[in-house]
Amino acid sequence: MLNQLQQLKPKGRDTMKIKAIHVYQHDLPIIGGPYVMSSGPLHALDTTLVRVEAENGVVGWGETCPLGPTYAPAHAEGARAALSVLAPGLIGADLTRPRQVHQTMNALLSGHAYAKAALDIALFDALGRLLDRSVADLLGGQVQASVPSYVALNVAPAGETARLATEAVKAGYRRLQLKVGGRDVVEDIDAAKAVFAAVGSEATLVVDANRGLSREGALQLSRGLADVPLVIEQPCDGLENCLTLRPMLHHPLYIDESADDLVQIARLVGNRLVDGFGMKVTRLGGLQPMMAFRDLCEAGGVPHTCDDSWGGNIITAACIQLAATVKPSNLAGVWSAQAYLDHHYDPVSGPEARKGRFNVSTEPGLGLSIDPEQFGNPVFSVC
Ligand code: 0XW
Ligand code: MG
Image (cartoon, rainbow, N blue to C red):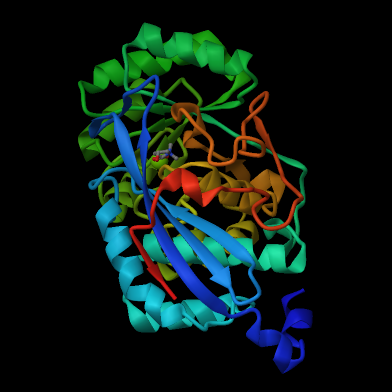
C-alpha cells in the first residue's frame, strides 16, 4: 500500500506534505468517578489533541492523555511542550512516510514518546483519508470486524466490586481488571475472591496494582488468591522487581508501566520472562512502533492489550484500529475511558462498546468526523 503510494509522481508528493499542525488542550472530567487506582482517586484529566493539515487539505487527528502526572513519566503540559518543539520541524514533512517522520521527530527531541504518538496517530489518520483506507488497512489490515473490550474496576470494598463485576459480565464483558493496591492487601484479596465468587469463569480476571504493591505484598496477594484463576498485572514498581517475583507467583504475570522500550520488550518476549503485556499505544511513540511490538508479541505467543492511559474518541479509535490487526488469540482486549466521559468528539461515529466489544470502523483513517470548534482555539498552531 505505502510502497505503491511512494511511487507517486514527484508533483503529487508536494500535496501530501504537512502544511500546518494545530495543538489543542481539552478537559476530560470523569463522570461517575472518581477513577481509583493504587495511587488514589482521579476526578478529571487533561488531554492534548493534534490536528495535522496537508497541502492538499487532508486533515488527521491525534491525541495523547497522560493519566495524571505520576502514572508514567508523562504529563499533560509536558505533552504540549514537547509538541511545541516537534511541530515546527515537521512542517513540509511527507505524511506518506511515517518512518521518516519518526526519524525526524527523534532528531528533534529525545524521548517524549507519548507526545510523538499524538503526531504519529494524526499522520496515520490523514494518510488513511488520503488513500481512502482505514488506519487498520495501513497497519497491515484488520483480521476481525470487532474487538473485545474490558472493564477496569476501582479499588473499592469487596461487595461493591463484586456488584460492578456482575453488571459488567451481564453487559457482555469477558475480561475484568480489578484495581488493587494502596490499602491492606487483605482487602484486595477479599475483593478478588468476591468478584470470582460473583462471576466465576464467565470472565478473565486481572488484578492490576499499577506498581502499587511491595514485593511482599504481591507475594501475599498471589498466595492469598492461589485457588483463584487470575492474572497479576504490574504488581510492583520496577521491571526487575516484577520479574524476580514471577517464579514465586501462583499466577501469570503481565507487565504494563515497565514495558517502555522495544529492545527490552524483545528480551522479555524472547526469553519468555513475562506472560503478557498491558500495552499503551502511546508508550512507544504511536502506531508505527506498535506494529513492531504487535508482531514481536505474535511471534513469541505473548498476548497483550491495545489500550491507552486515558483520552477520548481519537485515542480509542486508534487503539481499536490497531487491535483489529492483532491475531485474535493474542489480543487481550481494548480498554477505553469512554465510559467515564460525558461527551464524544464525534457524536455520530465516536466508538462505543456494545456487548463488551468495539466494532471496527472500515471508514478512511480513524473513521471519525471531528469539528475543531468544539475544542476552542488551539494552544498553538504551526504552519
Ligand atoms: C486500565 N488501563 C488501561 C486504563 C488506565 O489508564 C490504567 C490502565 C492500566 O491497565 O493500568
Ligand atoms: Mg495496567
